[in-house]
Length: 134
Ligand code: ZN
Image (cartoon, rainbow, N blue to C red; front, side, top):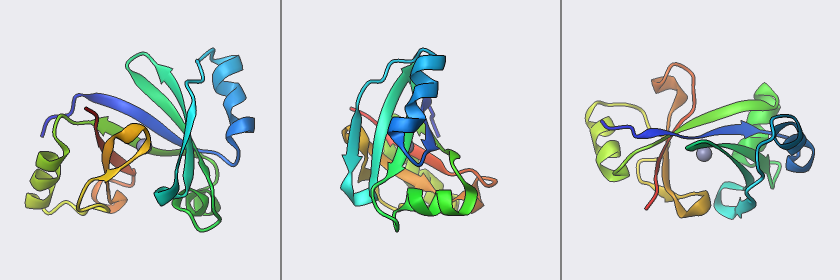
């Protein structure tokens, strides 16, 4: 399998408005905008860092995956996303290796990327996202 780079780090926060100050005022990162992905009940805010990004995640509903994550583990690091050149090939390869997936098929994430999550039980406890951007 080919991984091109770390696309972004996903960080779960109660509030993007409150959470973004550290990233902008302290670290000096640029706030590059936000986007709500209704299907995942989340608003994401992007802070480019070199060729990667920090992505803050704020739930838009109490039963969304990010709200559930914060309920269980508190705010903080939630997932790492690896950029792949071809997500269909990557998923086929993982299935052939019997790697447990959350998403058997890619779905559309923020920025129109095609994304899929691997199950943390298959990755040593980390939520891993694959991400293909055209
Ligand atoms: Zn992500």
